[in-house]
Structure formats: structure tokens, C-alpha cells
Image (cartoon, rainbow, N blue to C red):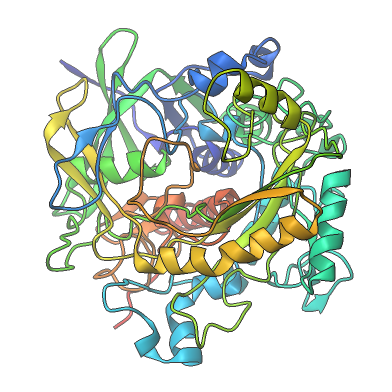
Length: 589
């Protein structure tokens, strides 16, 4: 039996960064907002005793329960898809705050090039530069239009960094390749440790332009514009896969959700698993959502004037497909939009250096403590004679090497036994890694759909992921990889193990990044996108779908800064829709 609840103005499906931002923004305007979160409540006090590497980092305490819901995976349409039974390549979170609780804190703005990538590529190199099966498209918004939302997110979260471009004036420090920003970061950058200093000196000597990486690990105590206070980072190193007990890593539970909870217009319901969006195709609207209380198995319908689908990327796409909103993407014809342009991140280019006489002591650190160069990102370098597009951010990070997971040894070392133990201890303090976070561009054969065979705990089809590396990815690695090797050699390493090729298909078993994107992409044409530039669904005007599912491709950066900016943009759109219910942006003719 389904119980129908009283209607509200806005319901968010999830209470992470996107749901939290939208809840805060609308509740502060006195709209009645309910956030439905299928996990449990969380507070910083919950993390006081969780420096438990085995439990959190290797047994995934903060992640979704794969025994209840998972995805199926295959490399191509010719292969059977099998369920992901244990975590590997990516780690979707569960509970209040979502993946925004266990992230590292690296916070970028995408390049202006990213938002107009197809137009800029054609203007610079001609349309023939785009491979036939690469579905490259503009986002329907420019960097300049999104910049105010980036600024809102950075000041809400308390991002630490150095601006490289303020109002088109290149600064002495910071990233000279970034888009123009209206003002400096709210907090100064993180500390420069010896290994970061060495990286900066070396890359500068090689003619590159290094800078300190922007970070959501707060460098000072900070009170944000909503009056929410956060602590100062202590550089303890337990950031990725952990919550921060100091409240010194910006997350939804330390910023936007407390601000929403200060109002009288917000309600958070946990253990509420949304199973369907109640879609009226004739009216082109969503009447509300249906959810199951995981504690009692009772089923509820929550009516709402606006629904914000603010779950994780993969959950957003799956709920759209299950609710039959929009045309599912067909890789054979290229028609349809829901599930199209699934992208990931390419971390296959890297170099690790081993030092015989120097110790770097990387066990102390922070999730986003690092230094970068952007000389090989976006279109910051000439692609005229190259056989790939875009590139990636190159960085060295001091996240705090934990003892179980971090025991690097040279490639010629046995995988177990006394020699492995000896060399593992020898190099624990004396090895470093430089990597490239490569962009992944959309290809016709990489997509998401519903699995025809496997189901979840409620009997609903699982989401099926079809993804593999393409020549674009391989060529990028072969270009950048040797340059990483050169950097590490010139940093003084006595031995270097470098990854400069992709020889195998994408493997879902080893961790790479939780940077899944696409499947409900934004754009200016309903035939090519799911949402417009306010993240408003073309097929259901009162449905907004922010988050990385809206990315038309993946850039050479971590996604969270852009996720936050799009959430503020969506909140602006929802506010406008509630005042005047209509399509906010007309489709291109």
C-alpha cells in the first residue's frame, strides 16, 4: 500500500552537494523543501574514531551497499555485462552528505574551452579534427555565464588557493590558464611541503608554470556567507574515503545542510530510498517521487511542485530510465539522450620515483595538498599535429600515505615475501608519484542503459555501464606519459617506473577515481541533451537534474567544483520556475 503525503514546494532526491545546495538556497527563500536521503544521518562527531584504514579505505564503510544495489559492466556491446560485486574503479557514497563526505577536497573550475569544446575545436582545427565516433558537443552555457556560480560555491565551501586570473589580469601566482574569476579565493593556499617545492622548481626549470592546487581542506578557520563555521586543517591525512572529524574539509554536512537546517522550511528524511519519479508525460511534469523507508519497507508518494534529481551520477541516470523520462540512448543509431556520453577519467599516465638518499615523509598531508601544472590540459598546448584532443592536469599530491594501501616498490620487486617487505619499508618514505588526470571525451560506444537481466533488491533493473578506452585515450597517455617520466627524473629520483601506454581494455577492478560523468547531459538542443543550461529537463519542466550527470564530457580536472557551480545554477532556475512555471530556456531552432 502506498501512502500519499502532503505536497511540498521542492523535493530533492539525495542530500549531497547538489541536494544540499538546492535545499539551502530554496529553504532560505521560505520554500518548503524535503530532502530524501537513502542512507543514514551523519555528523562530524561520527568520525572522531574512524581513522580506520581497514574499515573505511578498504572495506568501504561510507559507500553504497553493493549487496542491495550495484551496476553491471562490460567493455563493449558484444560482451555480457556482469554485476560489480565488490568496489573497484569508483566509490559512490551513501548517507547524508553523499560522496561529498569522503572526497579528498580537490576543487577546480573547468576551463572556458570545456564549455564550448566543439565550437572551439572546429574554429581552431576544423571539423575533421573530431573523430567520426566522438560525440563532442558544447554544453549550452559559457564559462562566463557560470562564473558567478563557481564563485558562490567557492565562498560557501571555503576553498583555499591562489588565483591565476582575476578579471582577465594574470596574477604572479596561481594557474595562468584558468578562466577569469571576479576575485581571489576566500582562503590562502595550503602549505608548500618539500616535495611540492621540488616539483615546482623542477617543472619551472622545464619551462612549465606550476602552482599550488586549490583545496577544500581549509587553511584557516572560516565562517562562510551563511554564517556556518568550519575548522582549520591539521594535515592528518585521513581525507579520501574518510569523514573529517575537525570539520576542516568542506562537505555538505559542514556547509550547506547546516544552513538549510537553520531555516524552518527544510526537512531531511534519511533511510528514504527513491524508487521512481512520478512522471506525467502528457503534462510534461513530474508529480513527485515514490520512496521506500528502508527501516520499515513502507512506501510513500511525496508530491512536489519541483523535483530536483540530486543523487549520484549513476543513480540520476538510472532513475530517469526507470521512470521513462526522455528517450533512452541507442548506440547503434546514435538516437536518444538518456545514458548518452558516459565519460570517466584517464589516470593511465603516471611516473613513480624512488629515492635512495632522500625521505619525503608523505604520511602527513591532506586530501587536496598538491602542486600542479596545466600546460598539458585543455587546449593550452597546440594540438594541430597531435592525434588526440584535450589533455589533463599534471599534479603531485601529498594526501597522507596510509600504511596498508601505500607500500610502493620498484617494478622488479617480487609481489610478496622478504624482499617485498624489505623494499616496502625502504621506500615508504622515499618515493613520490606524478600523474596526469586526463580528460575523457564522449564516444558513441560508451554509454549507460538498463540491464535486461540483473535486478536490485526491489526487482528493478540495474544500471548497465558500457565503457572502454579509445584511441583518443591511448594517444593522450603516449604523449603525456614520457613528460611525467622526465619530470620525476629531473626531481632527482634514482629509479623511475613510468606508465606511458594503455595496452589493455578498461579494468573496473582497481580504484582510479570517483569521477563518473554524463548520461543526463546539458545542452541547447533537446535532441542532443537531457537538460538545458538551468539543468531543467526538456521532457519534464519541473524536473531539474544537476550534478556530474550533466557533463557533456569530462575535463582534465576533479568534477566537484563544477558540480557545485551547476547546483547553484539549478537553484537559480528552480527559483525562477517557482515564480513563473515554464521552460526557462528555449531550445535552439
